[in-house]
Image 1: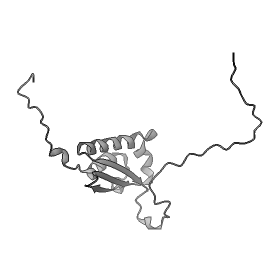
Image 2 (image 1 turned 180 degrees about the vertical axis):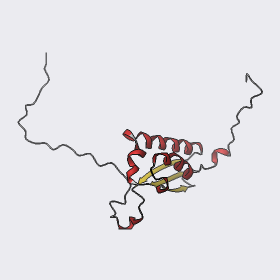
Image 3 (image 1 turned 60 degrees about the vertical axis):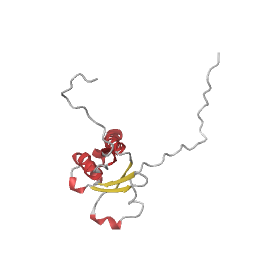
Image 4 (image 1 turned 180 degrees about the horizontal axis):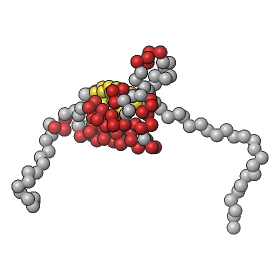
Length: 140
């Protein structure tokens, strides 16, 4: 029951949910405020209709990396959340890959430098024969 009948109630339109969002425009809208040179942003979007998956690849100047990622990765996580919400409305899964800078001389880079940005693997501590005493818990 509606309290105010003059306000139209939203209707669920099943055909509207199947339309795919403009991911390229959305990513550009979300990313450009963080970039010193917004024209350096490169966005590539690949969709798989059968799997209902979307792969978005972005590249920008490496000098803007800190602004885009934000403290503790908060900015990029917020961008991923917004993109995932848009994909969920159209019943799709989205993957966002971030690549290195978009300089024109990219052909001269090695294959290792051309890979997506990834965090380094954690290093394990090496055990050394140290003269530190072993501390055992007290028992009462």
